Amino acid sequence: MPSCLLNTKPSIIGDALPVNNLDRMRPWFVAARFLTNISGLLAACAATAAGALEPLLAPYSSSPELRIEALVGAPAAPRLRVQGNWPTPCLPTVEDIRLDGRDLRIELRSRKPLCARTSLPFDLEVDLAPHVGRTWPAAPLRVSVFAANSTAGEAQLRGFALIAPQPMPRAVPSSGLWWPLPQSDSGTTTAGIGFSFEVQADTIASAVLGRTGNGEAIWYFGTGRLRGRVAEIDLVAASPGAADGQSGTAGNAVLTLDFDGNGRATAWLGQYEQGDNQPVLRQQVIELAHLPFAERTDGSAWQGDWVLLGATPGQPRSARQLRLSATSFLAVANYRINTDDGSVLSCEREVAAPKAAPPKRCRLNDGNGLLIAEFDSIDINRLDGYTPDRTPVQLLRADKR
Image (cartoon, rainbow, N blue to C red):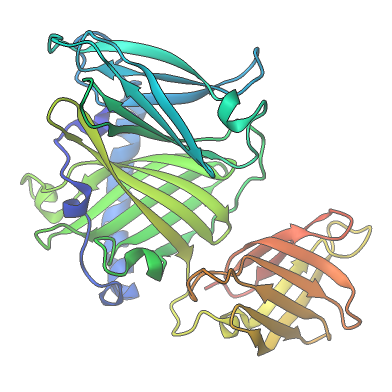
């Protein structure tokens, strides 16, 4: 993360992010505010990021950041490198490593007493082979580094990163407005947050909007690089008070994204604050989806004109127009959409997922039941998948929503 994000003291994420209800964030309000603010602020953010340095991992540095990266090459077994600044000269060792699914927790601790309050850099290598095996997992690892600089002190979150050294299919996130899924924003301080993503090649720009604890409108803007399905974006805070030369009430933030498909992502939105004896990363996890402005997000939202690309055997550049209509529900989690040529698009939801979430997978069969294509990356405007012979295929909406 460029150190330019830490020019102001960040507030606790729960205070800086909105408590407003999502239903009050009307599309015309969002569009007007974005058009008014995004150009100048994104330009400023890009200029700041371009001139920013890497974290200053040197004696007496006050940077709270940690650098977490995969070590590739020999030996081939999975290893991590963790670098940063420790608040005392009594540098830490790895106290504990725990793996729960894709969530990897690393705890660092210093056990030496009576250390001076002078920060020094540290550099550790962490062997993950006993925990993840001899090869890197196919899906990104969610690495959280906790730290404590005393024997009995509570370990606190100091850094987070998505580690994905293995080649993986590149996500194609849809540009536009994304919203927290109901299970994420109901009854929490994420209610009322809106996200906007714009993707060009491997560059992704993001705007996050909401309200502070004081009810003041707040925007975060930033750009980052999309690496496969993950991205890390440094966000610069902006508010009406800041634009008028007044001090804002919220600091800058960092947004880490894991796109599970074209229209579904997990976001980690965090800010640093100064703890009792070390910097602490306050973080919230938000499940996002690219959703239409519609009362219903079931199969009826998928009706309309579409173009199927690459599905004709032996013709990877083939194009075929389809009209999806006549939705029928097979079960709570499934529905099917007929086409004008007799083929059927059958979609399957995750049973535990919110009703507003896009389907997990869809299958397109012809009128005789033969498989034309199977899609595993689903968005309201684009489905990506493969034909039975593993030829890449896309189903694109003609009139995007």
